[in-house]
Image (cartoon, rainbow over all chains, first blue to last red; front, side, top):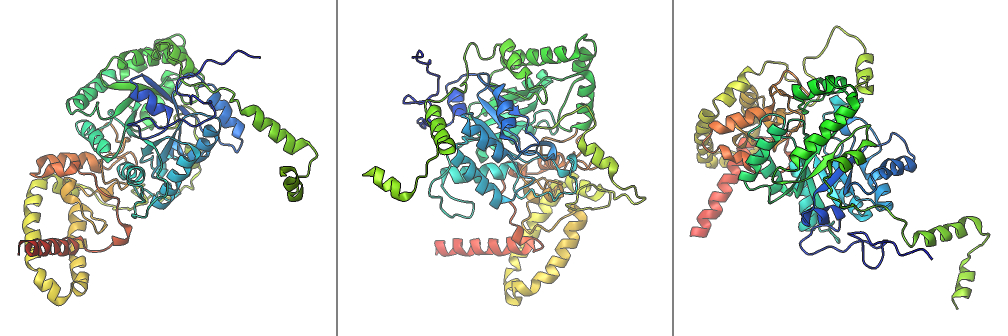
Length: 366
Length: 194
């Protein structure tokens, strides 16, 4: 007999396989909302979506985050490049017990498709949705695609909020079971118009945002100014703000991003620091850790969002070395007690030579 | 949030493989190609306060003429009014006839000129020089909207969350719609008083 497994925080008391109950005052059943509302410093990250139809690819890419993050963003064709859909990734992740944050971009779907996806996702157990506008199609590898942009991030937030709180579609038609969701949005304090950005965040909160993830922060003073303004306006109490951070692989990458990816602001000092380093990759990671240590002290920052594109293996190290979790261990995927049962049932169906005709089943039932 | 790669991306390969031709369209965004400089549009935004003052008088005049529109029939005046509205607003704001004009809430900068047609604020991709990420030569519609709104008396209307565009109202007259709606609210208000 194996010793009883220590119970994880945010696990149903009657068994790990059971879905969590919604706590009073919460809008979702998710773990991310629980962590943030408890006042713990949250860590989220981003899964690099595979260009394949193999579920193993998603499982393997999620596995390296086990025990280090509170939520995994499933990106929706980021940069307008086609990958496995965020709905598909979320279906796979929830099946394995992870807490995905489903991104919805307005570029590819109109309001009919989006509302359907929200219901589907919530039914699969997705508790967090991040509403984005999405990059233009010109940025991606299929520039000839039709840009939809039927909704924008703000009206998308409002649409999902209406579905959740009023139990209605945008048309007013009733939902029999409304989705229970924790709503997120993105902010970019590092792009003009700078003085509009904090007000814009207020607008997103009014539309329904409960948490926000920021664009990559490489300029801490700029972020500090933004947060000062956000606190003055009283938005920091109304919404959980997660600062986006990530390691730069090299000075060359940094320069490439700076000139090719609009919206990411990298100051010269960061590039100079990378160029001066012996091991640029290691220095990039160190810069990321230093930035985390600075931003975690800023009042109103509720967590970090680590985006380590193609360096996902560093996420655990970055989170560990920056010590943001303060010894807390986020939920880790464990074998569920019923895994054995499901496995033996599958084994029975696949390999035992039984024919379960209806007549036989009725006979055994008596 | 973004795909970042130092090496050659598929997107770059696709761009390079595009057939070479002497004719290269000026604008990138397929939503609409305006093909002219942004001088008049920017003038309108700089003079947003004047235009705000003018428009409120203009809207009042249109409302005064409501009995006339109703007498002739809104359906019948639609074509000539739309003709004028499309050309006047097209010249001044590069209007795209969405039919539900929000210029007063966006600092006299038409949000439908944004390649993503955002009606609630800028996206995260605005370039450091304040230009659009999709159209590198065009000043971001929302950077300008914020500037324009700061000059206006009721500029804080930019803080209102706008509803998604009703696509079924495209290519219809916003002037007539606003007038008819204002007349309807005026009538219900006067009925309540009586």
